[in-house]
Each structure stands twice: as structure tokens, then as C-alpha cells.
Length: 114
Length: 115
Image 1 (cartoon, one colour):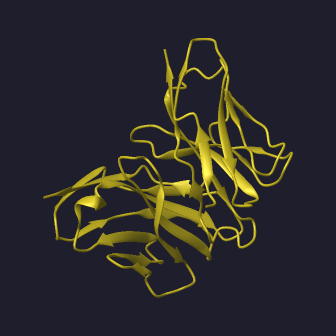
Image 2: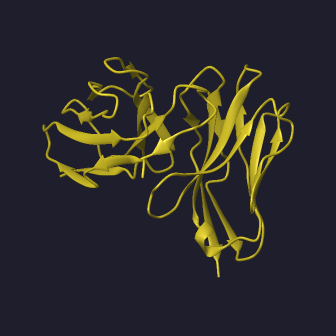
Image 3: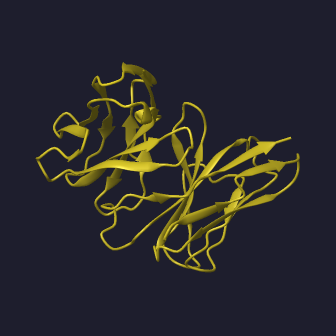
């Protein structure tokens, strides 16, 4: 399995501010896919954003954006204008281009304060 | 609406018992997966299946068994050989075409507790 590392177990952010979650991964492949999943207190896993490695442009989904640094094998998630509903655990995940299994990081718990 | 249904939501197991967790999907996805979630360890892959009547061990398969008799169904049995089964179990599925690209669709999970 590929190694995915999330070095921040917990983060706290004030409502309306910005928070950035870090993720690094280890792979020898040149093409692959990266994902951020959100797990709110309901524990339902929700796909937040997806990035294809061969696309240089960073993916964005409304208030969520990534900073994909392929050479550094880094895939950080930025949450802008944080809302109380963003409170959740966030998982970074990796999939090879010819694989269909996801490898997950340990997760980062984000708490948005009112 | 299409989705993945896991049942039951909560399950209690006595020492020495086998229990089976259900996972059903109506997304017409080829691949299905079982993950275990423990605090601070993320999601770890137990078993996965690409097609009917075929499945492979993941990273932590010991003490678990699965079957894939129908495309829609991928039940997980936690056997008495699993020494620390208390955890949150997540089932997921993905299409085979364009594999890797789509990521997973997840069920809502089963919380298993040993009593």
C-alpha cells in the first residue's frame, strides 16, 4: 500500500477564517489520483475534492482548494471562509492510475469555532 | 436514489461469536471494499472484490472473511479469530471503468462492539 501522511492530528479555526491541512504521500508512479474526504460527526464519508496528477492546475470546489506539489509529493487542502458545518475529520487518500484501492492518511480533525 | 446500505448501524458481539456485517449497493459498481476505522489510524483495508466470486485480502484480513456471490452484495464476517474487533467498519464501492479516477462511494458504516 502507498504511504499517505497527515501530520496534523487536530486543527482549530475561527468561523470565516482559512485553514490549511497538509498531506504528503510516497509513490514511484507518475500518474495517480489524490482525494480529500470529509467525515462529519455523522461518520458518513463525503468526497470533497479530487486531483489528477497529470493535471498541473490545482483543483477547486467552491470554498475548498488544493495546493498540489508533484515534485514534493504534497497535496494540501485549503478551506476558505470556514463554516460551522466544516467541522469534521478530513482524510487524504491516494490511488494509482491502474489501481482501484485507496490508501488513506490517519486524518485531521478540524473544529470550526463560532 | 443509488447508494450503499450498511446494516446494522450498531452491532454487539459476545466473545467467541462470529458476526456478519451487511453491505448492499445499487450503483452497478464492479468493485467493493471493506475498511476498518480506529481512532488515530485512518482507514485500513480488510478485503476487496473486483468481480463476483473473486476477492482479495487487504492489509488486515486476519480474523475476517467475505463473500461476493452477487454484484450488489459484499458481506463481511468478523470471526472469533479476530482478537480486537471493536471498531467502525466502512463499506465502499467504485466503478471498474476509469479505475482510480472516481474514488469511492461509502456506506454509512457499522459500529461493532465486543461485550
